[in-house]
Length: 300
Ligand code: PMP
Image (cartoon, rainbow, N blue to C red):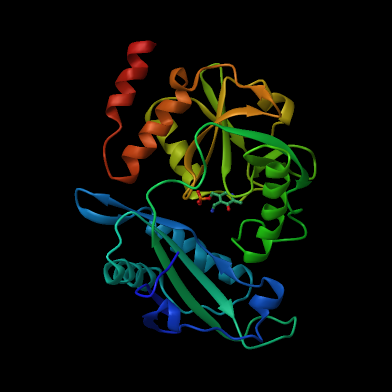
């Protein structure tokens, strides 16, 4: 992720990653009491652009607010700092990781002081592979009554690590976690969509992180005039789908091959999901998706 020349932003200044240090006596390190974001920048015709920067930083500020973490930066300041970080490191297609940590304080009362950390690394390919085999996890998503599930809290990700590792130990690529009622919620770090008879479905809000990519996909469906529904559904319903994908800033749109060893019915390249994947690739670099709209009309 970094080398001797990597620059990070920490405690109000830009410095070398190798020269940054953190406090051993903080609530973030001890209790996972910190919030973060995962953002991507892309090389476009207008130079390097951070995709959905405003939405990500609004969510970061909202996550901090929900956790009562004092955080003074405005969205615009955060965006400006991030462009400066990319520029200083000469990154174009990068992954950006803002993190808000609390220290020094070891109590279980709300954070008194926070620090902003901005990291980035050059990264052009999504972290998930091509056509993944996924399993329904034995781990549930955290009960929304126990956590602020719509905040992107570091501590929540222990649940993600357990589910992801369980899937890998069983020979799968990733996990699908259910909510406490047994409905499909999301993956360890991405939202889920499936296609059935020309329509798309995604889990309704409640036990998911409502992703920024998920909203982009919903907008793409509207633009392409593909009916899209947010609803609660069971793993059985999902296994009967024509095609399915995970989506997230880092994952982008990644095809699922099978769920619990049941293959999805359609070939990926013949699915509407694959057109959405291509549309997303255009969106992140600011290109139109009209060509895919025409394709759907031709096939109709
Ligand atoms: N769910 C979880 C648990 C995640 O970690 C992520 C990645 N941030 C997502 C969904 C997708 O969110 P986004 O599209 O905003 O990256």
